[in-house]
Length: 177
Image (cartoon, rainbow, N blue to C red):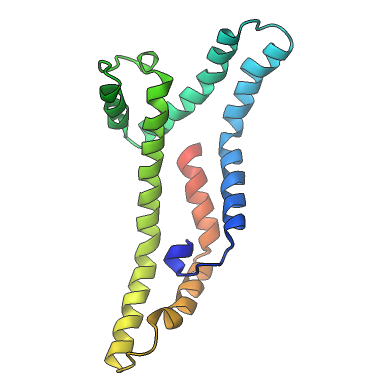
C-alpha cells in the first residue's frame, strides 16, 4: 500500500506490522484454539506424557491449515517441488508429505498470493501516475514531479473506495472462506 500510494512514511511501518499481526491472530485463532485444546491443555493436565505425542497433536491443526491454503490457491505444485528437492516420491495423500516439505511449500504459496495482491493493488495507482505524467508532459511542465501531483489523487481514490476495509476484507476472506 505504501509503495502503491508512493508514501514512504505513511502509514508508519509499526502500524502496518500491528495490522498484519492482528489480522494474522484473527485468521489463526481457530487453529491456535485447536492446538491449545488438542495438545497444550492435555499436556498441562498430564494426559499427554511424551513429547512425540504432544508434537503430533499440536502439528495436526497447523498442517491442516497449511494444506487448506495450498489447495485453495491451487498450488499443489509447490508441494511437488519440495518433495522433488527432498528426494521423495510424489505423495499419495497428505500424510505422505513431511512437515519440513509442507512449510516451504506453504510459504511459496503465500508469497505468490501476496504478489498477486500487490499487482492488483498497484494497477489503479499506476494508471493515475501515467495520466498525471502524460498530462504534465502535454502541458510542458517537465520540471514538476508527477508524484507531487498524483499523490493527493491516489490518497483520495484509496479513501473513497475505503481501501483499508477492502484490503482487510479480502485478506481475511482469502483464509476464512
